[in-house]
Length: 70
Image (tube, rainbow, N blue to C red; front, top):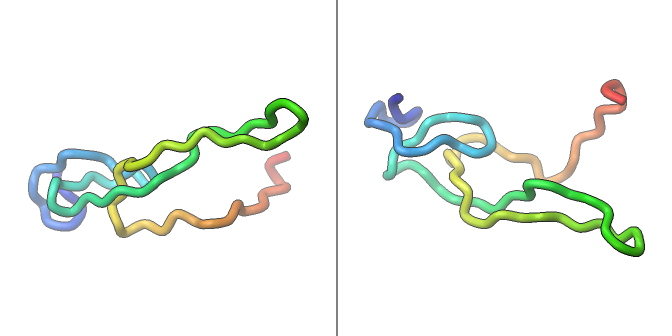
């Protein structure tokens, strides 16, 4: 596959949107991989630092309500 930005050979895939990126164009960002309710009804999240990000897509900082799916 080729890099989305420059057509060089890609080295990774953006965790958020799936674009392929080369070593020169990748960036990193943290993300949550799961959220759950722990003991005493305290919400907890399992985060991963330094995941691949293309730098082009815009992961949203707040959850988006989707009541039609429930």
